[in-house]
Image (cartoon, rainbow over all chains, first blue to last red; front, top):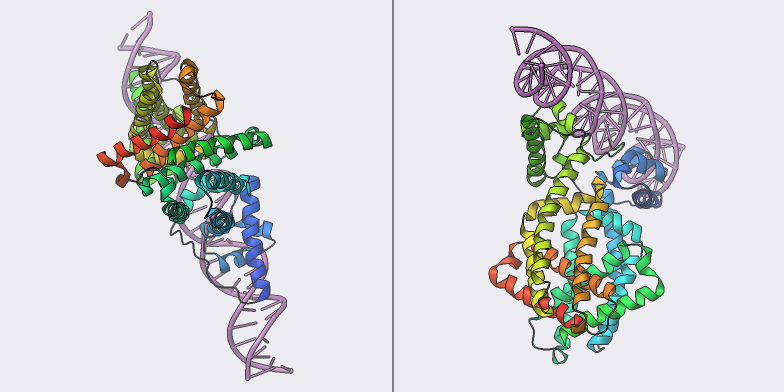
Length: 207
Length: 207
DNA sequence: TTATAATACGAGCCATAGCTCGTATTTGAC
DNA sequence: GTCAAATACGAGCTATGGCTCGTATTATAA
């Protein structure tokens, strides 16, 4: 139990059937995490849910952590794709418009799979994947800072690093908290109101 | 393992020595959480660290979760004391001044015991103490909202609930993230700069 | 076809963690 | 001093989870 948390897959699947085994494992892990929570996600259960022998599981993933890490990576990729697209889209837009879009995207991104997102957010520290997630945070932060540099003339005089930190942290927290607080904050009207408020918060701050 | 997560202490200590046993257990739990993390905090280890028999531990706490919950409660009390004092202090101050002070206090509160704070923040979901912490969040939110009601004339027209949510969430996230990012963000100069920026963010938003 | 590699399987070993229960010791009331 | 209640103790039971390893099956290359 918790000896050396290796998180790298063990070997690369080369044949077709093995790749589908690997997929089944990752998907089963995600399903169990969502349905039953981290503590119930034993390797035996994961294998069973995936319809795969426990031995096969260990042929591809050296530990339970590695499987969860795979789920985290996949989820992060999904989110990062949305975020990247959004930044590309707003690159030449003025601040207020850009911020409004980014806020909306942040909420959307958190809604991709809220329940999975919640479980992962809670369990990331245990998987030793904190570093990855911080890297992911830094990426967003860097994208935002690049945007600010391109639009310096629209800003008041500021430390761009600080401004990016404050903006990204606030937007992320608002989206995260709103989504986790459940459906009350996610009715269509409520989302629009939240987007407006967050936009005012951040755009007002930057200008 | 994880059967019925009772979190209430089992019996009230009435004699002096038993009270010191209880204290020793809670303190040992906190120490181990900080030093070794949640997974290493087995009941046997906690008892050993406290210099107490495992049987005695179970005379006062029905489960490991109950012990962690006790630590959480204590930590929350510590923080809430600081927060309450701050709100009392700023009650009659104008917005900008009040926000500045509240931001500073938020950072201070997170620095009470950062390492413990981090571990607890990570492990709260598992302890079934989420409700308590949300209650604690709501308390802060209610205090802030009450402040806003008293100072409505200084605000632009807003939904007070929304304004409180946005303000509290942002301040909390900035303090939390800054503290967790480690010492870079916590040099005296950096703290002052962060306080100024956060104040501008929130005060600007409210007015 | 045959040989070798890749893939799949799952019974069961080992470690550990939570927790009980019978017993020993201390305290305090009378 | 005596006795009952409170407190303390820790060996060890039970459960469970991570993971190995010997074996069976399927794919591919020659």
